Length: 184
Image (cartoon, rainbow, N blue to C red; front, side, top):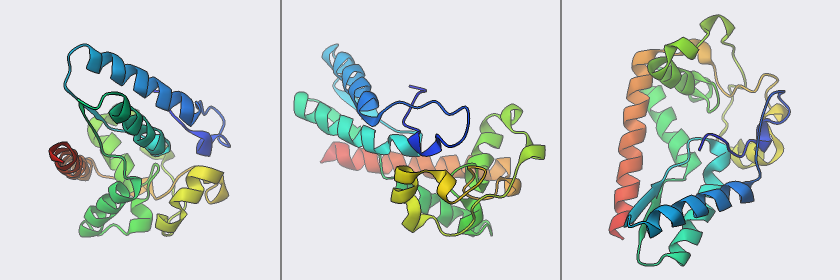
């Protein structure tokens, strides 16, 4: 699903968002439909920080409604960002520059996946301090409280080869977590 919960970006013109309850209900409806058609297992992975809570709630609801099915998720935003920062530190990129929204690691991933969508001449530095303690407040009160341009990090430092490595690390992390929860 391409639409998501982006209330924390609404201060930036052009943002489209839905309510968390709407996304949760959509995921439950989609999941229930698929699982009732014979699928035994579903894995729900959010790809946007604002969606993590709705995904967690939807998976809990699906597990309640369909107790005979295996329904897994990886929805730990802090863990995902920490893993990204750990890897960026190995590349010599400080955590603040690595960021969490249009910073080095996200821009590197996009540069690897879709370089045609990256306009490096428009890359800017945003908020580059430690965002870890701010994550709950950023999602609640919005990015505009700490960054004038919506950027958490510094996308000017991106590199496509690092983007590939970030994706690999994310995949390993997510698969490990999903497989552990499926075995439980």
